[in-house]
Image (tube, rainbow, N blue to C red; front, side, top):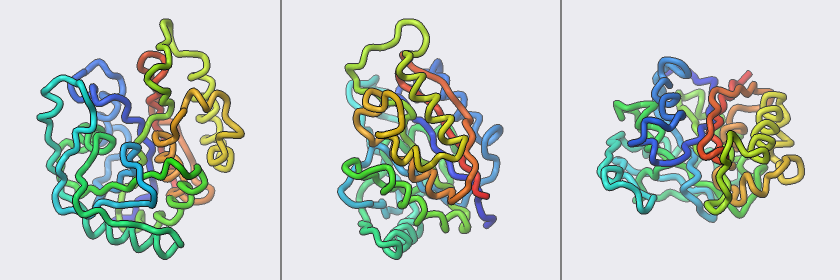
Length: 264
């Protein structure tokens, strides 16, 4: 299996994209194999915003039962399937790499895929024939912790594992007012700062975004949708090149920016 030189951060946004064709990020994800990444990985590791644990935890299962972790949505969404195989061998390797690097890492032998994984994968790899496992985030810890998690996982790329962080580049609280015209200025300012920091290689600034980024408190009142980016960034290694590969918005406040990191 050829080594992989890229890691990705994708903004999965709302699960409504499973049935709503007007969500712009949907067509971007559908074009994945044609326009973004044409090689077929051996397996996929998704760091999902929707799995928060005290210590890094990876799901080690043979099947991928889906978790419908959203409420009050149209009933067809609860019938959707994504029957990809699980990846228990990859889960063991993740645990081994993290443990060697000084992290605690737990295996969860029951948990399936939450919508941070299966919703985007439905469009990126609709055949559902690539083994998938998930890694959790630790919301009570910081960006640097997640960056170091990623650094520990970098060797997986040599084995043909595609590492994807799945969150949202801008993810305000539900009671943040929608922008009536275009993108809310506070959201655009944060998103533009993030693009400049990543594409300039200022990873340290992104790790310390709470002292560097404008409007971070409204852009990410809770950090769980941001930290998958730090893992993808870390896994790409020192001196990697970041590139913005998609940007769209919903309500002018929910950011769908996606990034590719290419190892040098």
